[in-house]
Structure formats: structure tokens, C-alpha cells
Length: 284
Ligand SMILES: [Zn+2]
Picture 1 (spheres, rainbow, N blue to C red):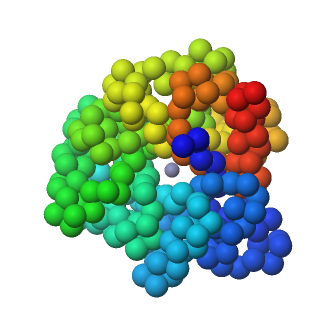
Picture 2: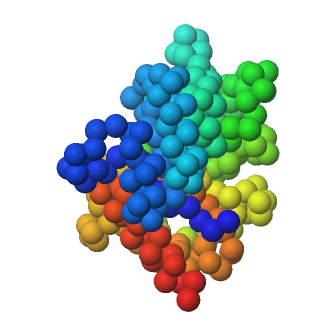
């Protein structure tokens, strides 16, 4: 199975062409030559069961790999019992939506660590994730792969090391490596092929070859300040990093089959296609 490429949410061009419903996305993506779609529940879990089932049927018919982005306001390091409980429920309810849709993966942001010792915050998040996984197991929904994401701001939990440590909890956990976030947090740390390779090798050493080969990835050019991530741009905005070719070359070198989701501003599907074309140029 080769890598799969697709957008996070719907491109502006999708609406400009007169489409209105995400149910039309699988056919639209297939027509473009794409193979993945990350459905956003980032502002709340408000999809109805019958809509989710219909989306899943369309995705299956057009061979589009579905993933879900869980709500942004999850914080597994919260010290407020009610907020922590809600955070766990947002993941659980995203998993339920994934089951309706037949989505394979649920991506989530681990949480905040502002005004907290990072190690303490990480340990809190590990405990909360354990409880979450226990509930998912009780629900017999373990087939949905949970994917904690590497984050782009200093006050967020989710450096590469922190996400790898979360994923060591259970073999079913797969990291979402967001290369734009890593680059923003590292103040432009991803430039050469060796820079990207260091991320991949660290992941392999921590989680093994299978999870390296089947990573979940986010890729977009992101502007940053001293505090990290500021704004997502498009692939044409070359003044912002990172570039895709160094990673594309490594995907070929390590025989990787990740899902690569593009989070460009407005042109996420077009840019996902450009990345797929760049990847294919390295196969020749
Ligand atoms: Zn995200």
C-alpha cells in the first residue's frame, strides 16, 4: 500500500465549484487523484449518525482513507476534574463517530502545559490516556487507531519526545507527526534531508519499524514566532517552511506508507495533490 494523500477539511475550490456537503468530498477527492480525507470535528462533535454512515459509504465506494480530527479543546493534562472528564469524553465520542464512518484513525491534541512542569503535565496526560484507552477497549472499539499529535506552540504538550512517550503506552497508538508544527516549534529546524531523517529515526527507535512505516502525518507551511506556530500558509508560500521534497525522498528510502494530510490554508486538497506528485517524482 503506497502512502495516501489528502486534505484536512474542504478546500475553498470545493465550495467555489458549487459543492455544499462533505458527503460530496470522497468523489471529488477521487476525481482529483487523492486517497485520504481528514474529517474535522475540531470545533465540536456535531455530526449525526446517519450523515457519518453515509460519508463512510461514499469513502468506501471511492477508496478514500478516512480519519477524524477530534476537538481542539481536549486537554488531557487539565487539573480540573470536570474539564479532564470532558476531554476524555471528546476522544471517546470522536471514536464513536469514527466507528459510524468507518474512519481508521482519530487525531487529537494532547493538551496544554502552560504554568506547569512539563514532565508533570505529561504524566497527567499519560494517566488520562490510559483511562481513555480502557474505555475504548470496553467499548470494543480498539480497531480505531488513536493518534496524538506533535504540537507547534511552546505552551502546548506535544513535542516529538512527549508524543512518542504517549505512544509507548500501547502498541495501538500511532503518532501524528505534524512536520509544520515541529518546524515551527524548532524555529525552522526542518530544512535538510538529515533534519527530517532525524525525526524518522527517533520515531523508529522509540516505536519500532511498523509504526514508522504507518505514521499519520500532517504537512503544511507554517509561520512562527518565538513562541512557535503562528499561521498556516499554502504550499506556494515558499517563504515559510518546511519543504516537502526532503520528506518525500525519505518516504521512498524507508519504504514508508503513511497517511499524509495537508492542512494548507484554503488549498489543502490542491497542495496534497502537489505533495503526492512530488512523492511520485522520487519513485522514478
Ligand atoms: Zn491538529
